[in-house]
Length: 323
Ligand code: F6P
Image (tube, rainbow, N blue to C red):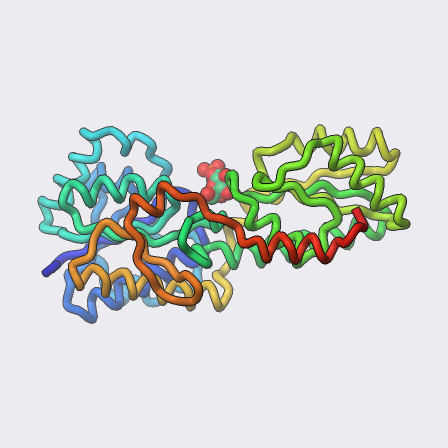
C-alpha cells in the first residue's frame, strides 16, 4: 500500500494542469497519504526540488492557468544516471508513487520510472490533444477556446479590409486543434499534418474561394508545416490581394481553464490517485468514449492519436465543393 505520493508537471504547460494538481492533492490527503509536489518537472526531480503540500496550498489554484509547480523541458532525463538520481531522491523521502502530468515525451520518462520501481501514473496534459486512447487531454479545450476567439477577431479585420489571412496554430505534428477550429471558425482552406496539402494547392483553393465571390479568405495551418510569412507573400503575389500571416503562438497555452476543462481535470486527477491506491502502476489514465480508463504506458507512447474521421467529414461536408 502506498503511503507517500508526489505530483509533477512536465513538458509544455497547459490550462487545467493546476486543477489536476488540486484534485490529486485533495484526494490523496483525504486518503491519508503524505503528499508532495515536485517543482520544475523532471529537472526538479533530478535536483531534488520536492516539497510537502497541503490542501491550503492548492485551495485557489484550480482556476489559474499554467502550472503553479512549474515545468521544464529536460531531455537529459533520458539518461539512465539522471533518472537513477531522481529515483534516489524519491526513495530518500520514502515516496513510493508519482503522478506525471504531461504529454507523450513525459510518459516515456514516467514509464522508465515505473520500471525502476516507482509506482507511476501519467495524466495527459497538453494543449495539442495528441495522446492516443483519449478523448480530451487537459488543456486542449481551453486552447481551442482561445484559438476560436482569436480567429474570430482576425476574421473581423480581414472581412473589413477584404484581405486574406494565413493563420498558424500549435499542435506539434497533430492537426486536432486546427481541424476543430476550422469547423468552429468556418475556415476556407485548411492544411494539417494528417491531410497535408502543398503550398500550390493552398493557393489554388484560395483562388477558387475568391472566384466563388468571397472577398476575404481564411487559411488555417498547423505549426511546423510551412513558413507562413513566406506562404502569405506567395498568396499575395498570385492573387494580388493583401495577405497577412498570424501566428497565434503561446497565447494558445494561457487562459483560465474553461469549465469542462476543469471537470475533465478533476476526473483525471482523482482517478489517478484511486488507481494508485489499487496498486496500479505503469499506466496513463484518460477519458475515452466518456469513460475513465487506464492504458499501459507502452501502448500510449507507441500509438498515435487517430483524429476522428467524423471530424474530417464534418469539415469536408461543410465546405462542399466551395474550395
Ligand atoms: O506541446 C505543447 C506545445 O505548445 C506545442 O504545441 C508546441 O510545438 C510546443 O509545445 C512549443 O514548446 P515551447 O513552448 O517549449 O517552445
